[in-house]
Length: 489
Image (cartoon, helix red, strand yellow):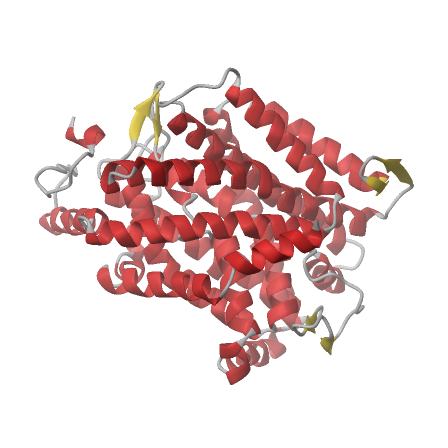
C-alpha cells in the first residue's frame, strides 16, 4: 500500500505542480497589483463588516470555517516535516508560497462568491460551480466535484486524525496493545480514534450552521493560545532568533535549495497548510452574506496570512530555536541531528519536543490538546466541502442517503487514519491536495483568459470604495460577467 501511494504521489507532486503553484501566485499578484499588500487594512475591516442571515453566514464565520480547514495538522506536523525533509530553508519557501498564494486565494474565493447559488435555503458555491458556469465545461466541474469528495471525504481526514493519535501517544504513553484486523494498535491511539469519531459524528450530523457556530468560537481561541505559547518560547530564547532567521533565509537561497529539498518541501507543505489554490477556500467564501464578491475574496486572502505567516512561523521558530529537529536527505539519511534519529518527521514530535523543552511536563500534552482542536476543526471543514460538492452533483442525479453515506465514510477514514502509520496517512493526504490543486489552479488560470471575472470584481469594488459609497452593489452584467445568476437577480 505504501509503495502504491508513494508512486502516485510522485506523479502528482512533481516539479510541475510546485512551479504551477508559485507561478500562478506570482501571476495573480501582478494582475491584482499585489492586492495582498494594497488592501491589507481593508481585509481586517471586512472581517466584521457583514452579518449572518437565514441563508448565509457572516464574513467572520466564513473566515473561521475556512481557517478551520487551513489551520490544522499542517501547521504543527506539516511544518515539522518541511524542516525534517527540506531543512530550515523550507520555511522561507512556505512564506513565499503564502505571500503569493494570498492573491490566488483572493481570485478563487471571489469566483466562489460571484458564481454561488442558493440551494435548499443556504448559499453554496466553489470551484465546481464556477467551472461549470464561467468555463461552460460540466465534465471538468464533475471531475473536480468527484475528486474533492474523494480528497476531503476519504484521503485528507486520515492525516488529521493520525496526527491526533501520534500526539496523544507521545504525550500519554502507548498504554497496552490490542490485536485487530488492522494489526496491533496501542490503546491510547484506539481511544483517541473513538473519541474523535464520536464527537465528529455528533457535530456533522447537526448540519452546516452548527459547523459554522462551532468553528467561529474554537478557531480564534485555539490559534491565539498556540501563538501566545510560541511567542513565549521564542522570547525565552530571543538571543538565538536573529541566527534562526538568518539560517532560514541563507539555506533557502542556496543551489541545493533551488534544485531540491527546500523549495519542494516548502511549497508542498505550504500548500497543504494554507490551501491557497487548492480550491477549498471558495466553498466557505461562497457561503457568506456580503454586499460585494470582492469583499469575501479579500477576507479569504487574509486567512492565508493567519495560517502561514502567523501559525506556521510560530511553529517553525519554536522548533528551530530549541533545536528540536533532524534533517533527512532524499535517501532518508540523517544530515542534521539534534534529537532521536528514529523520529518520523511526518509526526508532530518535533513540535512537542520544542514546547516540552521550554515547559517540561506540560509541552507534550499541550501540543496534543492544541492539535486535537486544530485537526478536529479541519475535519469539520473537510466535511462541509465534501457536502457542498455532493450538493452540486445532486443537481444531476441523486443517490438515496448520499449524505449519510458521506458522513459514515468520512468517520471511517478518520478512524483508519488515527491507527495507521504517519507516512501512509500523509501520502494519501498529499494525493488529495495535489489532485485538487492541479484541477483548480488550471481552471482559474483558464478563467482569467475567459472573462477575468475576479479581477473585474476587484476593480469594481475599488471604484466604489474610492467613491465613498455607503453600500456596495455588484452588477455582473454591467461588468460583462455572464451566468452569475444569483447576483443578476
